[in-house]
Image 1 (cartoon, rainbow, N blue to C red):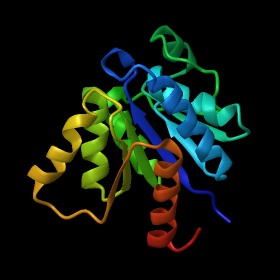
Image 2: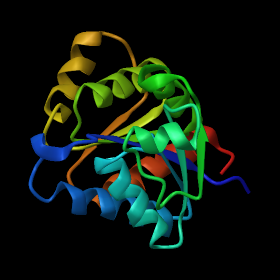
Image 3: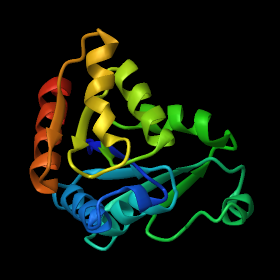
Image 4: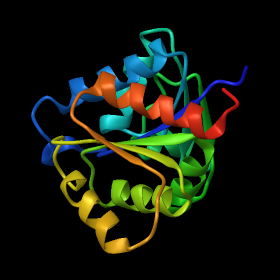
Length: 182
């Protein structure tokens, strides 16, 4: 059976987020691993890093999509290599990497965030990906429901949840229901 792949999108710098956001991101990664799904990140710092750590330390599998051309450039950009089983070096920069990243997952979870997270959110919305937002995590997360309302476009279902465990469970449930193959 193929495993479900969940993209983690969130602030690379979490200063605009709630105080315990790193722990929340860790719990999301841990829960994804415990549900035998794969974590996909932008191979970056901040909340995606904490989710990768949560998954990796709990026997999960983590894939990263780096904006860099190779490992040397990735490290020069100050991006981490730990807590990932595989890192793909796209060489596409951040914006193009974001499209590849979102398309690689069966669904995406959004935690706090800044403009890069909003970019990934809009891509996921446009691509009709299954989506979940960790409510009350801070940053640009507070505008995501407004973006959906103002888009005036249909989307199957977006999960809005404050509890990491429930958030992951609900997302996996709708991915299984909609895809029917997992």
